[in-house]
Image (cartoon, rainbow, N blue to C red):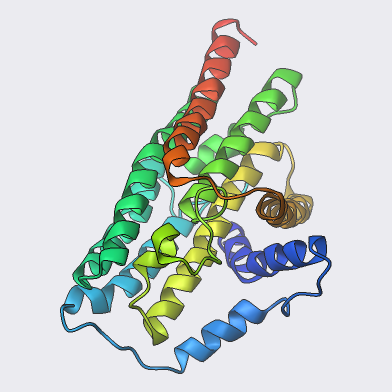
Length: 302
């Protein structure tokens, strides 16, 4: 239960941390910390408007997107604190729960008949396809080091107190951070603040959504941001840390995760679309590097 609660806390607070970090670095006060929650509250009180070309899929897609993200959150542990749902190979279900949510959102975007939403959907699918190998390489590395195939047992047994494994954990955390930026449509791949249709990716897919449907998509995005953050936190927090100390360190690490994203978005320009494929292949190369390091460590008996 504790990991799930942390994911919910992160979902509520990370957007505020990112916004405040960007604002302070720009010399501004910025919007209120909980402004995203207020905006979603406004959306929840509004009705939905659907395109004449849409079907039932468009109406249920946001709810399915949110439900699949919540299902993925149930599979995430925190160190020795187990996930609410755990079994051997659960990280495969995790990956494809998130993929299912993205699929229904893409199909709903295509139903609108808008060329902009079709373009954004194509880019979203391409980016997901290119970043997926990195995720499985990162989890394969952890499975190789620990000898287990479940999130709960992997992170409970992954002890990075030695110098070699500490180096590996930093590589893994960096890999999870890059996957988080791609999966959540953040810079340098996408810019959630853009209003230029030709450069949109994720935002282009939800142009036709309104009211409660758009609120569901925003909340699911917050949850995904928090989920990937907790995975990065799991990679760097030593397994021998227990109790409330582990929870405290996790909260600090999640806050740092939000600050890092704010720093990236303050000092990094968005890639040109032609450069994104190279960037995503590089992200997968980071996962491959982590796997190679783990293989060398395991075969050398370290």
